[in-house]
Length: 261
Image 1 (cartoon, rainbow, N blue to C red):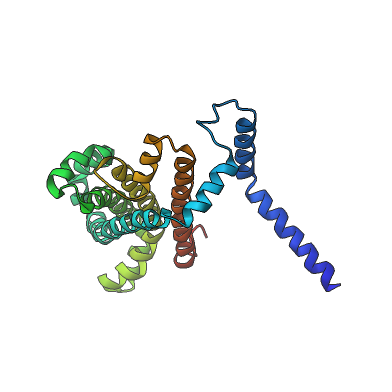
Image 2 (cartoon, rainbow, N blue to C red; image 1 turned 30 degrees about the horizontal axis):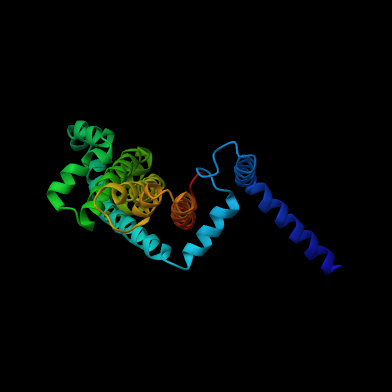
């Protein structure tokens, strides 16, 4: 009886796994079919098998070094953005007059593509690693502090008034009401910021005098027409971005478990 139950549970898990990855399987099948029928030049589109073999081989060669350098730069930029963005967002969000007086500058820089800032950051920081980290941190900082400020301003006034009525001091109102009300919006900003830092770092590695990192690896493979390596590196970069997002989802569920309730 127990064997039957365990077999049924295994089947359910397998069905659930297949159902949750049906989109990925469809993409892989389409890719395989297009490559097999040679609807696109085989030199331009290798098969999924060839790409995955190249990825596996690269994992035992130099890909991990580039992978972890890009991950390090992305996390470095993200930490700077979070440490500087959260306090600024709280300060601006707590005083709507200050926020609205800076609104034009906030919207201007938020609407300016981070890649357009590359020349400025190159002039200020040079062409070393920190220029890449700085421009990614700046782009992510705007996202973090805007979401935190919006979260603070969106705090339900009735809860703040209720806390004041019972005589709670300002610091208790901030930590017990404003802080927890702001957390869901703060995590939205942090998740968006970590994805943005990775995007900016990859682009910076491609075009700002880099000799390593996943961005440089992708552009080098494209320029040498090693398209199997290019596709493999793109997949590895996608895995990095997906993993970072999943980590933040787990953290968010742990610390903001009341969200949506």
